[in-house]
Length: 101
Image (tube, rainbow, N blue to C red):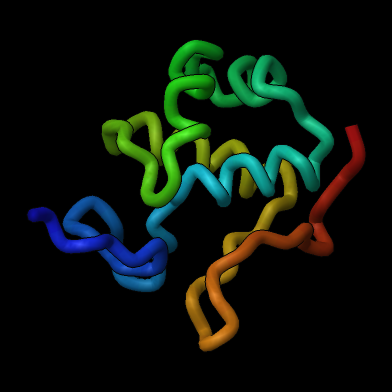
């Protein structure tokens, strides 16, 4: 039996202080930005079928590092901040750099 993975646990592909990107992060970030899957795909260069495959599976994204990095970078550049586990749980919020559109 595989141990359960915490959404805030670091893995070998993430540097200290970085978030382990989860499907919950991606869905919540898209909702904050009012982006559909197609918009995220176009901006991140990750295909719609890949996003559709990743989002329904709870927990850390089951994708290669290039895909995870592209999604996270795109969402952060759009103004999303990923909040690490700090006793209140992981989450997302819009930063002051957020721009509509």
